Amino acid sequence: MCYYNGIRVTRSEYIRLKDLEKLLANYSLLDIPLVEGPLYSQAYPVLKAVAGKEDFELVNMEWGFLPEATSWPFIKTREEVKKFRYGYKDEKGWHKGYITLNATAENLFVNEFKRKSMYADAAMSRRCLVPSTGFWEWRHVVQIGKKGQPLKEPAKYPYHVYLPEHADRPFYMAGIYNTWTDEETGEHVDTFAVITTAANKLMEQVHNAKRRMPTILDDDLAWEWMFGKLDPERISEIAKTQYPTERMAAYPVDKKFKEAVDPRAAVEYAELSLLELA
Image (cartoon, rainbow, N blue to C red):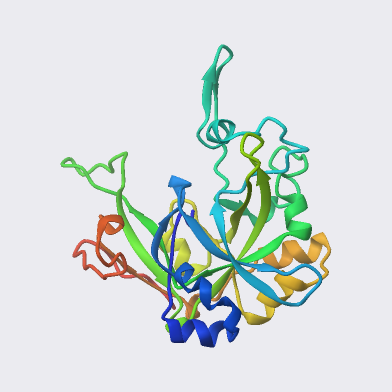
């Protein structure tokens, strides 16, 4: 869910967005047409609160949350990070990896095993905003075989999802972050996850396999998420926010959009039914 994200902002738009000359040196961070989350390789610009102030800085973070060393002490090196993310095999068998590009709103504090979530501490004290001008999701469509039977594998069509009212400026996704330390090199790396919530009517049709969507926040909720002194109940409430269907839009793009010059370019597929927005 929400593994492909992008942002493209002109220099003048960036000045208007932040209105702080001190961040102009970081302008290059806001010219990323497409980031492919599953690769865990490309940094992404994130808005991070400045400690003790109602102000933020724009910093590059690594997409793919790495948890606290106190509770996950075996993730000390890049080799161990690789095992954590992709899984590994030893004498005991195969150990599944953890996909931490997204953190589900329903499990920020307690995971599916009714234990403290790896995201709990970050949700309480390290909330951030992930700017975007649009993201990509896959719509699954049942295929019919020659004998009229539904085939096991659906056809998959990528869609670009955006907010028309934000055509000239980024919108914000709720995020959480943690600083991970590589004990071999001593490097400190900020890592983050995008919060996801249950899909609204639009995203139920676009992301119809998992029916999830990123938690998109309006300006007031974005400020509260970043700077508010919140309890777990309020954090969870904001995290579960569903951005209104009528304020979002989506259209199909090339199935090879990841390789396209413009991954946002619309493509028509005669076999696709229109999305129902009313």
